Image (cartoon, rainbow, N blue to C red; front, side):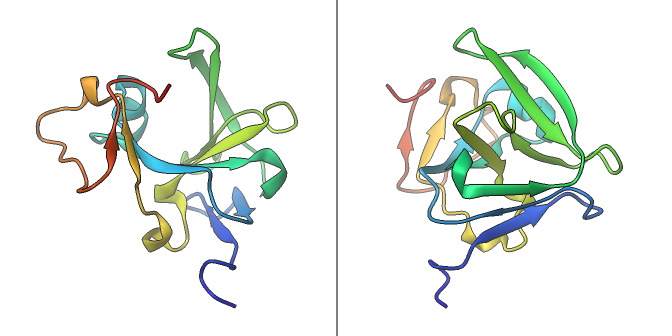
Length: 139
């Protein structure tokens, strides 16, 4: 099985919250918004988006809801045991989910193609080369 055919798998620090995603992500990138920076404790969050039908989750989550840029509600899911941030979106409700790429078992599979919320990017957070950069979200 080639890397491209292998599922994307990952989870939290302690392994209590896990996922497996099949197929290729619809988007891979870095988000520099203030919420992602605070959630990650870094200058950005590397993310991957998958259709909900392509991901299976196991384990309990601790959910944190906050207003999104679009005025809807954003939901972040972390492990209630270790606190590791794993994915975004509500299972059983949303059409797609954001996997936080730092939670991948094989982090080398994350290959950022876009940078979003560049307007909020700290000067010390370097952009990866040759990616599309958006001030907020792509149109």
